[in-house]
Amino acid sequence: MKVRTLKKDKVNIITLGCSKNMVDSEVLSGQLQANAIEVVHENHKLDHNIVVVNTCGFIDKAKEESVNTILDQVALKQKGKLDKVYVTGCLSHRYREDLEKEIPEVDAWFGTMELPLMLKQFNADYKTELLGERLLATPKHYAYLKISEGCNRTCSFCAIPLMRGVHVSKSIEDLVTEAEALVKKGVKEVMLIAQELTYYGLDLYKKRSLPDLMNRLADVKGLEWIRLHYAYPSKFPLEILDVMRQRDNICNYLDMPLQHAANNMLKAMKRQITREEMEDLVQAVREKVPGICLRTTLITGFPGETRDDVEELKLFLQKQRFDRVGIFQYSHEEGTSAHDLVDDVPAEEKAARAEEIMEVQQEISLEKNMQKVGKTFKVMIDKKEAGRYLGRTEFDSVEVDNEVIIAADKKLTVGNFVNARITKAYDYDLEGEVV
Image 1 (tube, rainbow, N blue to C red):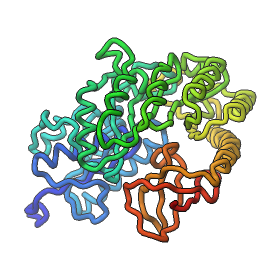
Image 2: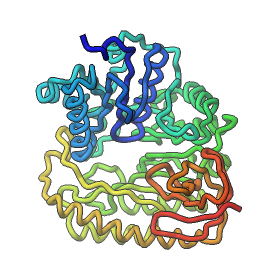
Image 3: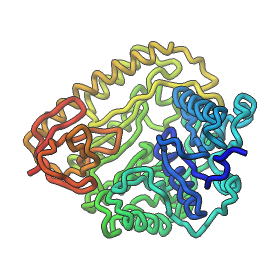
């Protein structure tokens, strides 16, 4: 018998993909911990004996990363350094049968909704009373708050409904309880996430209830920043912006993926909106909340995309001047309606178009950052790295947006706020000094 098996189990959770996956891993951690099982996130000490890989199955690159991570863990198991390898998440949910045949060394595979089943592998009980109890994988001063699961939209490129099911909202009461528990742990900022934020409440309350939720969360004492991610533009409920303007602790920040600007592309993507309607919406958003930071994401290389479509998208960016832009290269996903189309843009061309579009945005970002020089902003200190502090303004979300670099002349506390005057601007970052 191996000595390792005589030791108490220690579980390492590896999370791939989006912030919604991160929340699922945190919930799993909370359940394991409540069952007196030691658990860690992304453990590099290799002193654990069980691994759970929480996979992403969104696009080709994410699937490849997930498979490679599973194979790495299986290799450790084969060397005797691990006892068990379990796999969960979107890739496992979507391709379980194929994966079981291809990687039989994995001890068990689980879908996105099978947490109680996974816990049985650890002889652990699913504790329903642990509402909102999570072992945070983020620094303790910020956290993601998943307000719903699944999606009812039918975007032709997206496989998420195949993996996450239909839209299911959490109740306002449960989310407020969760937010209060996070604040007790030291959380000062929550980022509201969902597959589709603006759909929130339609299933529970028969109306779009995000404004109601925002108001209730804004009342939670100690919650200093509330940030909105992944708002769908079609039929966007503008009353969200009234609440944002009225409540000081709701960041003037909106992440609204638009995906394209050419009407033929938007139609083929089944986005239920036209370029003209998007332009009207952007104008209305900026009128409702002057100075708001608008973030969007785009897709290049969708089937049938032409050079004219790319040029139209670039002109759209130059006209609308978004503060933040992310870009994906189209991935031909089986099970989606776009899979019936011919994936006719070569991979190298998709990448070239993405780079071309980001060059346009790079100039816009630099110009907008230059306008901040000399101004003072409230900055949350996220970490200390290489002898300097890295923080964010209310206009920047974690990992995807700009950082404010502050020289470490005096000790600052990670998780606290400071007032910083911006002294220098780069394409995607700022330098500042504490005032």
